[in-house]
Amino acid sequence: MAALSSTELTKLLLAWNAGDELAFERLVPIVYRELHRIARRHMAGERPGHTLQTSALVNEAYLRLVDSRQVQWQDRVHFFSMSAQLMRRILVDFARRRQYLKRGGGAVSITLHEELAVSQAQTDDLVAIDDALKALEAFDARKARVVELRFFGGLSVEETAETLKVSADTVVRDWKLAKVWLQRELTKGTANKR
Image (tube, rainbow, N blue to C red; front, side, top):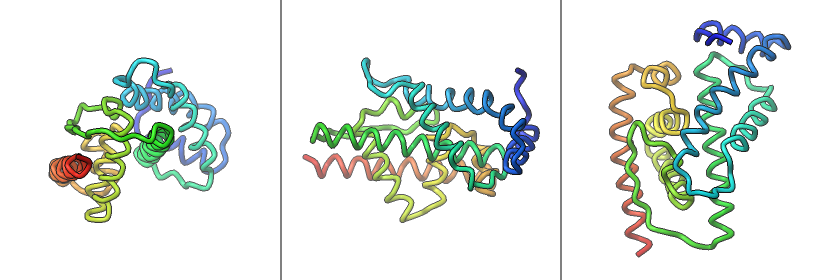
């Protein structure tokens, strides 16, 4: 199936909102393909033998999205930003369960780069990122949202700007400042564990 334009995808999402099951059937392969792309980014660098597989992450996110029929999808970017939030929750919940079972912690040293996937962080690191992101959200909610959309959702600067209804320049500034802020928080967290 050829890739749909953003406008066509938005029309399908709106039709699905209105109860059009044919629109839903057309959306399924598109959504699955995009969720797999996002999940592969998250899972690519995980340690060998990681118990959460890409397909499991995609399936869990997909089931939660389909179950969220009360959400009124605005457009493609809204849909995939919600996907990013769901993947973040799934990954962090998994990491917290794993951390709880191990009862251990570790040093956190992460550099957030545009091309960095969450999967490069170990389980403890993912929990630390989530905690730092929550602290950033309390300090500056928009910057936290930029990180969530870019880091967990894989959205471009333009898509993030469209979602947040700000300029691309604002997203770039927020992204840079948020990375510095989060790095400081993560470093502070590491120093506190010693």
